[in-house]
Length: 542
Image (cartoon, rainbow, N blue to C red; front, side, top):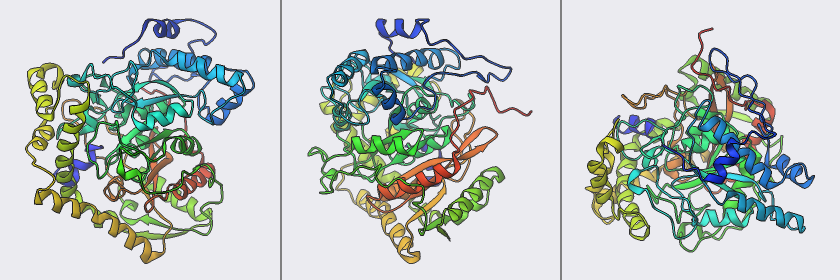
């Protein structure tokens, strides 16, 4: 979850490289190293052949015989070596999949025989390191306490990803324990993976907790990636890194096999450079899973690309968060331009105040999370292959290895969560009722104005990385309303201020993914605000 803004409202390593993959990465083959630094470490000649390429374009090139899946995989692996572990050293990847080339070869063989599984066939994908994979990779949530945890089987969404023909390229770094460890964390830091950097400006934070997934997509280390969110952990890093991220309705994607925080709010979701690519990935990942009752809603599996069109906003009524019209002039300027674009695309715009109504629910949300985290993590660890078998054992491990695990911030949230009792406790039940009252707030607001969606600035400007003091708030946070309600939320690039990206959010009611994807697509196609990162060393005064 995105602790930076959640705290305000409540109170306020390394990569495992196998020998064959290392050899591929270092190989000075046809793909030349084109990163040429200037005074501000701006890589002005980043001419990586797969920069900004879409899933559709990758499929066209594979079908035409220009590239094979193996070649694409090798190119991304080399890219990871050159700019994730060398050059700008983004540190987005926590582990590579030693089976990646084997999977790619299998997909190439199927294609040659005339079989393709769909738009993700042979496409390299990265996934967050809190999602189980039944292979040689670990699942650790970035924690040294979880080292050696090799899952017995894939999470359900990874089963779906494999069925779709994707190549699992590796796992991404994250804010340790999905940013549910300390009251003074630095997003993008974990004891196993260390600090991930924002590829747009390297001394800026990528946000979290899906830091590595956002950075990997933004820096063209993969085609698309999977993140997870409890409150803002997909949408906020997507905004900070200038990409598209969608948090689906809770229950659209299975949570089984994902290290949990909150069964009320947790969900995985796509992170991509375009709305269409996010829609393609969302389509592949969705499905009913008997091990996650929240997914057994009886909805027909949907192709989320079908409603994408440039005129999707025409004739719609869109609420805009009024409170975000004030604040940092650069951010409010982008927001006002975005609102005007929505008007020009044919929508009626109505000012609303949602954040004011939901902000008072934050303390209850935090209480709910602590209860659900303890129960959920204990249940996960009982079945996992980790050396620690409970939250208590995690806490003990961290204390015994404090210099390595907690050099900058401690584990107050883990310890506070461990004091909570069962979910039959009145405190928990009261917190749950108050938190999910956000559904009623959103529903009534949308009904009052007959709205099709509500939009707002996703989050403020990326803050500087500060391991000593931790994260600090830069305002405009819109992650909580949809997170507490379990409703869908998409962030799409809105522009930049001093080369720092800012996202625009659309939210709507339960299972309205197709609608908000279409609105984001119309905005994206009209504005084209997505830019590849420049890997600036810092914000320049020139």
